[in-house]
Image (cartoon, rainbow, N blue to C red; front, side, top):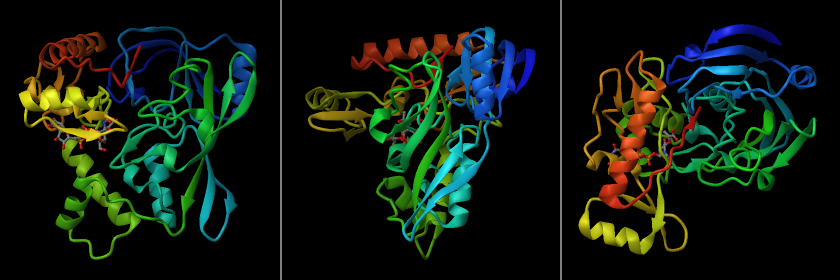
Length: 335
Ligand code: EPU
């Protein structure tokens, strides 16, 4: 465990926002985690890759950064492999490792920023696949009970960008490792329209997990800003799920509106479309604004304040409500 005082968190959040942590505690092992909770008080914030975070203020107390490494095979059969992965492993490095070994299941989730330990928190998803489809189980430290506990798929209560760790167990559990079941003869998922088109344009002769990963990487690079270049947290808002009849009403008024079936009589509306229609796409307010290629992403052009980005998100929520009578919800964690 490494403990530092008065640390600027700019390098530890993909939005690139400055906030001072009174103490930064870097956790490298499960034993570190145990020792921390035995000796110290409750942390003010637990950080993974810092990729789903909007920091609007300095943080008094401890910021815990999960840096537990390791990708270990714990079960290997003819068809699949079960891996135990440390919470601190960078998600995309894990994906690349699986692809290099020929293990399928996470290729559609290529290039998602963040860490493995943070991935189950919001059940990360992209291009027709979400984490819950490869997830086996995880181990988390329950702060009040002072024990490590295993959670299977059902116990995590995964939903669209949701899990028990964002709800009932918010601030009460710290994920230390995650187990994934990957396939040796995977079924490839190209159902998401943009992937097919991208594969065609890249002229891949044989479909493979590597081809899908390359296609996903190309799509993401074309639409989503690279946090190394422009600070951002990916989708800032969730796609709202509304009643089918309400969607049909909106369709009459706004014929181009984009939505996808989301269970019985429900439609998931593309929030990016709503925000673009409201005139925000590519809009800049000095050092922050809305990304030019994907209106669902708010960006820090350099030196922005988290509170400014937050106020912009409030304005967008208000405008979308006025225009479409839809209340957007933030996907990012506001601190
Ligand atoms: N659209 C617009 N204007 C925009 C953006 C989108 O009109 O500025 C419309 C387009 O019609 C497009 C449709 O919205 O076809 C869907 O856009 P896209 O495929 O980019 O997906 P999304 O619904 O905006 C979601 C996830 C992304 C994920 C993509 C691909 C959420 C909140 N976001 O975005 O996840 O990469 O699908 O699967 O569900 C993230 O969570 O950080 C993230 C990037």
